[in-house]
Image 1 (cartoon, one colour):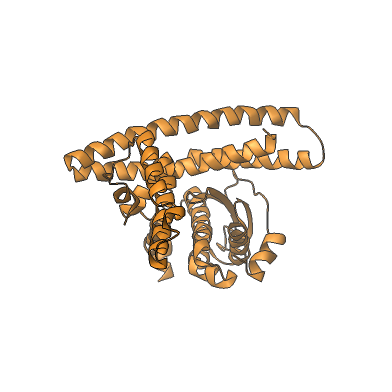
Image 2 (cartoon, helix red, strand yellow):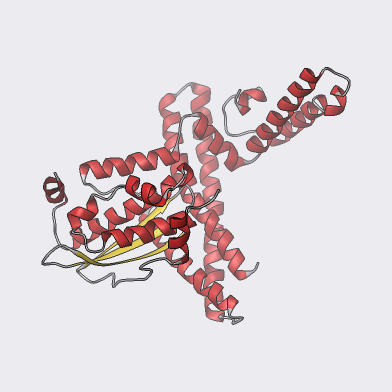
Amino acid sequence: MDYFSFFNLPRRLALDVVALEKQFYVLSRKLHPDRFASKPVAEQEAALAESSLLNDAYRTLKDPIARTQYLLRLEGVELEEQSKAATDAARATGEQKKQIVPPELLEEVFELNMQLQEMRAANKMGEDEPELRRDLMTAKDTFDAKMVETQAELEGLWSVWDSGVDAGDEAAKSRAKDAMVVLLNKRSYLRNLVRDVNEALGV
Amino acid sequence: MAYSDKVVDHYNHPRNVGTLDKSAAEVGTGLVGAPECGDVMRLQIRVNPETNVIEDAKFKTFGCGSAIASSSLATEWVKGKTIDEAMAITNTDIVKELALPPVKIHCSVLAEDAIRAAIGDWKKKNNVAETATVAAAH
C-alpha cells in the first residue's frame, strides 16, 4: 500500500499537514504496543508492522520535498535510470548527452566548490581568509535565495499537478512531473552547496 | 558499504588531479553533474592535433569516493588513446574495473559523460564533425 492510500489521501501534493499530523497521532495511539500487550503474538506483530508503515508514511508525506520525490517515484520516475539511459543513447548516436542541469549552474557549483576547498584548507591551517570568507558569505546568500525561489517554483508546480489530478488531465500531470524532476535535480545541487558553505563557514 | 581496494587506492592517491588551460585549442573540457547526489566532475584532455592522441588528462571532482575514483581512472584510461578509442570507453568498463556496487553506478556514468563531454568540447573547438568519429568507430 502506498503512503497516500494509507492516509486515505488522493495523490495530490498540496496537503494539509496539520490534519495529517492529527491523523498520525490518532492512528499512533490506536496502534500503540500497550494496547496489544495481552493480544496474540500475530496481532502484536501486525500492529507493529502497521505502526512502522504509519511512521514511514507520516515522515515522508509531512516533508514537502520527500513527499514530492515519493510521488514522482510512485508515478514511475527513476532519476538514475533516466540519466543512464541518456548516456547509453549518447554513446549509441555519438551525440552529446543533454545535461539535465543547466551548464551555468554546473559552472557556479564547480567554482563555489573550488572556493570551499580553499576555505577548508585555510581553516585547517588555522588561517583566516577574510576575502574568501566574504565571497562565500555572498555566495551563501545567493544560494539561500535560490533555495527559497526553488521552493516557490515547486509549490507552483504542485498546483499544476493537483489541478491535473482533479481534472483527470494526463497531459498537465505529465508536464508538471517533468518540470518537478528538473527542479528537484537543480535543488539537490543547491542543497549540497548550502550545506557545504555553512560547514566551511562554521555557521 | 565497503569500497573496493581499487576505489580506495584511487581515492587516496587520485591520478591526474588538476587543470589544463581551458582556452587552449588543443584542450577539451567536460563539466558534468549527477543531480541524484549533487556531484560535479570536470575532466580535461589535451589532444595532439596531428595524431588525435590524448596526451594529457586532468580532472577535478567534488563528490563521493566512487565519483573521484571513477574520474581518476577515466583520466588514466584516456591518456595515450586516440579520440576514437577514448569514445569507446563505457561506464560498464569503469564499474567492472572498480567493482562499484549498484548504488554507485551513477558515478561511472558521470565519468563516461565527462569523457564524452571533454571530447565533444575539443571537437567543437577544432571543427571536427561529431558523426565522422561514429562512422570511423564502426
